[in-house]
Length: 376
Ligand SMILES: CC(C)(COP(=O)(O)OP(=O)(O)OC[C@H]1O[C@@H](n2cnc3c(N)ncnc32)[C@H](O)[C@@H]1OP(=O)(O)O)[C@@H](O)C(=O)NCCC(=O)NCCS
Image: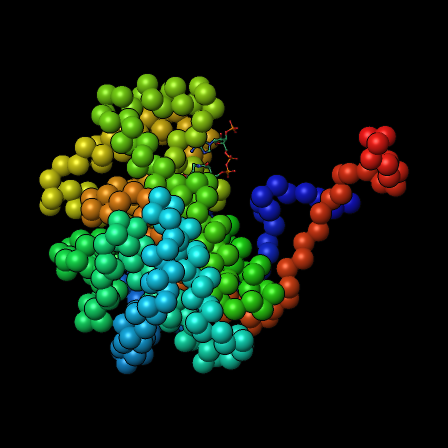
């Protein structure tokens, strides 16, 4: 008898060396290095190299990787035309997914097992995703998109392409920490989706487009947008408790709380909360942050006993909001970070590939008769 595990909970689907999570102790490591250390000492590009290639880069390797990323930021004008034609009221994640799928048509290399093509495709995807996200964010309002600058670092360039201004380094660093913390998280739904697509030997643009589609849902990457909308709807600290009680009584979820793996507070939420606190100490109080602290406090009281605590999406949205980023762009920023994890798993999958083909437990009928249409 096959045993069915809803959501594949507890079912290993791969062996991996990329990241490690312990949801009881609140541990997350990338290639064995705790995320707390990476958030403090590394940056997104270096962490990206670590995740993709299995070790920290030497100085010249990091320089080359950074330069390659900067060199590949531009996107073809035909892709800009395509993004321009997308409906302005669509969700940015759909635009990013469509553009990434189309990106593969510009680089139709079929040799996905060739290490040089693998490197170049990974660089292109990591470099161009921010350009695509920022392009749609502006083009949808009829504004021109802003060309990337290769003299700026990865985060500053993204914020520059969004706003036209070179950001304050403190804010760029806050975004960088968000990107590090969103870069990888073992076999989550979007990574698994990418791995399934990779197992068919589809090209990496298709792999990433599949993963983007899966990340979009509100139970996954979409939670940061929902969490900020919820905090805005609550409005003030005094409304928190009645709001949460009403929602729970109606069997609704509190967005940004709870996690399949973590039964303690998500270690990424702990770091992001510190980043948010530092940012608001510097920039002045944020009503949204005050509401969030109260939601977390009341959430602990009412849901903590079920192992439901703040997750990564709870504070990331508040930070993006403080950086002046529109709410519906949050999930695309998640994708801009997670593309590294998806690609690391793509490379690992290809080292020992077998097409995914799980089982089902059939619960339907057998040998039924075919009734002619006039007798049904
Ligand atoms: C992330 C999530 C999908 C994990 O789901 P899961 O592992 O299937 O957890 P379960 O649905 O089994 O939840 C276990 C219990 O906690 C409750 N719970 C979990 N998350 C909750 C939340 N956000 N709000 C209220 N209750 C929650 C469930 O209702 C369930 O209660 P019950 O045992 O009384 O029925 C879920 O916590 C959720 O929907 N969170 C909100 C969305 C979110 O923030 N997602 C981002 C994740 S990084």
